[in-house]
Image (cartoon, rainbow, N blue to C red):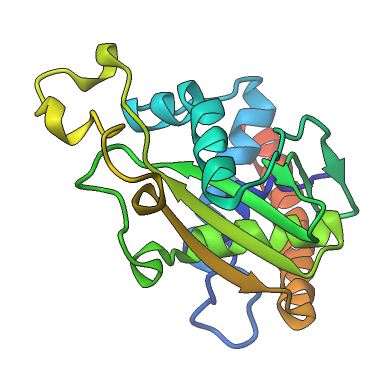
Length: 210
């Protein structure tokens, strides 16, 4: 049964133009891509220097968050799933909050205000994590730590070497409360996506039967 990872949920949550439809054109495009990968047996790995930094410095970002919150949070390694979703939240915390770490690329891209850090895709990701953990609060944590030298390239190093800046100025937090009505919307979208996915898989097979 097709289940969605939290980071992908935002791609199918946009509303369609027709009131009698479940999936938008963009959502269908995402699902067609997933069906193609399934039929042809491949998984396109999208990478970038921004994503590479996020993976490389995740531990440092968690340490930075801990230093600011006076906490001792550890990276969660347990994958959770329900009937619609499967995912591994970054931090499942004993204060009843599920947290996700976003390591900013540089001083230029770091959101210095919480309003600047609001992102619809990240919000849906957080709502998926709240469903998976059954927790009522999600916190999106933007952290700014040094960029590894090999990733900086020709950019100004001063925008990437940030350890001298007060730690409190290098963490921006965005909060979301659980909303059960939006979780019902996630369920409807995933179930609609499953039906469309199966249709596309069958259509690919039918169109390539000679």
